[in-house]
Length: 134
Image (cartoon, rainbow, N blue to C red; front, top):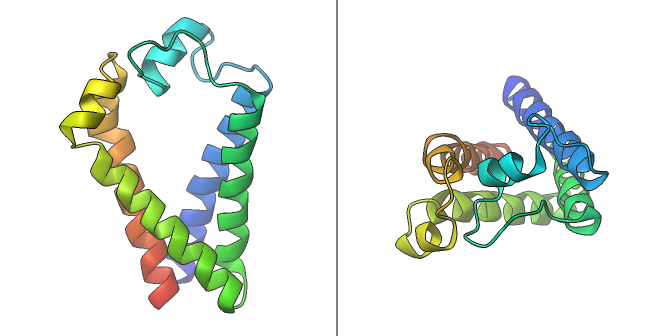
């Protein structure tokens, strides 16, 4: 279980840092905002990265999950992990819905979503659920 918690915490921390960087205008790993939008946002009409507030909220939420993964079991921890497992699993499922494909048609996002983002979210959700019920 320690290996799973460490792996989940590491992945979520890296994703949180990347979102924090985007929130302060550091376009990583692609330095061109327009190309980055096409890779990580994918919405049909999107031309700019989300602003500092949405990026900071995602980053903060991910950090809360990381701290919950390593916390002693209690009601709040279980609530946070249960909610985050559901959110990640739903995001993973969303990848395969035609409605989502219509909302996020930009390439290469659509391909990356099906090959990386969706499966990763599903695995994170499953991993968090295992930690919660393990």
